[in-house]
Image 1: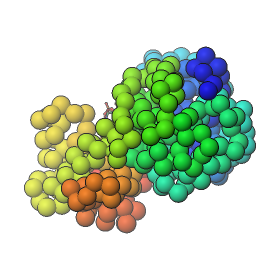
Image 2: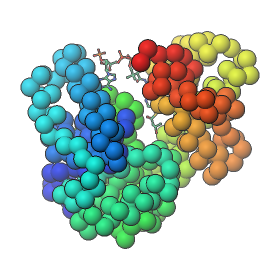
Image 3: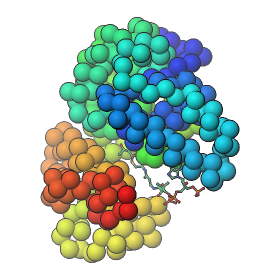
Image 4: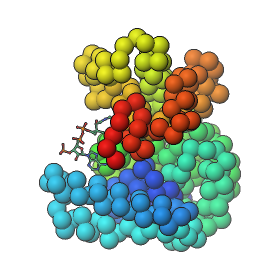
Length: 287
Ligand code: 3HC
């Protein structure tokens, strides 16, 4: 296995919100990063989001203009998966569909050196099933970042059935090198984070749909009552309703009816109202 000290170049697959956030924090930590997506438009959008995020960090004096430029210079966008042959550690952050992730891992397995660890940012899908698409299941691990990645401190390390101890240790060490703090979960549906978070969000949506209170009162109630920064409906818009629906459907399929997605969540996703990213969710946003 390629060890922590040998990691110089990091591959990130998927330039969406999570992928570009991971690329940004890896580059901030000093790694060279190859950020790959299937269309150049997705890569460009991801790089533009990184620019915006770094500018916010300059604006609040977290980094200097110079550090922004240095960080940005360490990130190279590409649509060519073969270029990830040059990487020493890979994090996949593509869409939450098992077949797509398995295809990506099978392709990565053929491209990336045999001793390189492949991590997945999946939020609910089985690490073991993703790993089985490769010939290096013992070197596949879950590395689940939280949104927004540049701001959120926590990263969940998820051990698949075959993940070895040194690979798990490497995942913790890598996350800590990105200035994150970790916790560990077994490869059970939703892991620790989304097994507990998604039913909370789902119940908030049901409470709204069933007329328990207005959406503002549900969010205010949870914020004032439990000191969380966002109520369930705001947080659902922040994460993306499509992602909440995918995660809740996985939990429902694996764990039964207590996780059945709220009717209103499905209806909003069907209507294309996915939260902040489309400008319309439970609340309206100026895009
Ligand atoms: N990049 C850089 N900086 C950012 C940023 C980004 N993407 N997003 C926010 N910031 C900075 C802002 O510039 C601001 O800095 P300042 O206070 O020094 O000026 C600071 O973070 C706070 O941001 P805002 O003032 O815009 O807004 P808030 O104070 O409301 O904070 C929040 C925004 C950090 C998102 C906060 O509301 C929060 O912590 N919400 C909960 C988020 C959460 O729970 N995330 C996890 C979701 S679960 C998940 O991701 C798992 C997945 O599998 C579903």
